Length: 152
Image (spheres, rainbow, N blue to C red):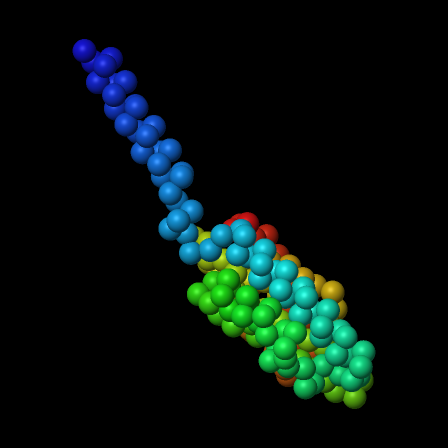
């Protein structure tokens, strides 16, 4: 009799566990597919920034509100964490011109993860909020991030 009860309890636990694994993605605020879309869109915007720089000699005046870039901007706004819009910071002085762009893409138990791309070649998921480093008052760059991302 006890073996039947133990077997029934184990069967119920297995069903609950399997159902949890199946339905868990429905309750997560963000998925790997969403972050991939954001990363892809930012990569395309990065190319557009460099094209703009090649033509104009600076990143100043670059706008996301163009016919070609608006769909990418909408995609980022739709799939970033909490639908946060992309922030692009440019920095220009006579001897230097740089950009940095970032958006939150995933929230983990340990905190937020961001995707950051800049003009010196960095493009990665980081756990350090770029807002403090990626500013217009200095060469715009993504922060150094010593902790690897855990969300993806």
